[in-house]
Amino acid sequence: MIESLACGTPVVGTNSGAIPEVITNSCIGNLFEMDVENEAVSVLNLFRALKSTLELARDPGSIERCREHASQYDWKKVAKRMESLYERVIYGEP
Image (cartoon, rainbow, N blue to C red):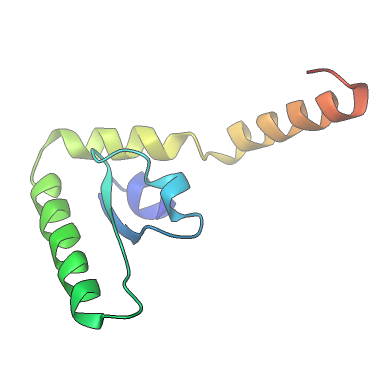
């Protein structure tokens, strides 16, 4: 997902696991609900999410929004956040 967003492409994902932590905004992609009891409902949900995401991809502003969202996952930024977290844990800071 991050690679797709970094290329400026909106994404589709299930509303489970860590995926909703990445697709946090309907301006960069869409989530859909899986129904383990009813495959037809899952397919319909996926179809709707894909349709919305294709419409989103036609918006020229989507490219920049997707890239901007993906930039928060840059390794340098992630490493800084992890370093800060470890320092707070080690030194007992809030």
